[in-house]
Length: 127
Image (cartoon, rainbow, N blue to C red):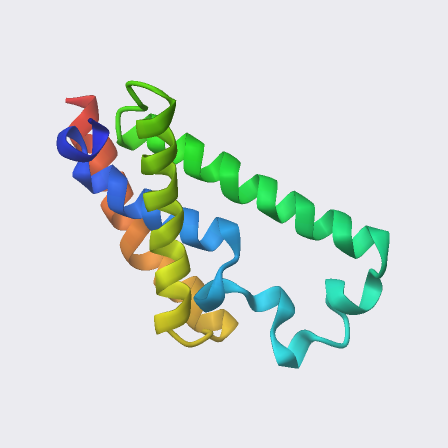
């Protein structure tokens, strides 16, 4: 499993997954301060529904990619879906624990620790 061989790449991958999915601490685009120009105002009806369907597909695709890269895929469909569900459960549970960040705090958080750990992990993998 990639989580055992390269843990310094797994943890930044989890941060990146959380930010890519736009879950609670990282959902800046639907924040109350930006609601006057966000997707909730500019889209409506079938276009907003299409946006939500696209986000559901993105959630599934990102979890499948994470399971394939870091958790060794699956021996069969049942274990693969169980691992994907566990990967999706982590960002969902974090979304209900942490408050929403401001944009500058978010950028500082994501560019400082996960990128540093990812670069160190890449240096270890290259050796």
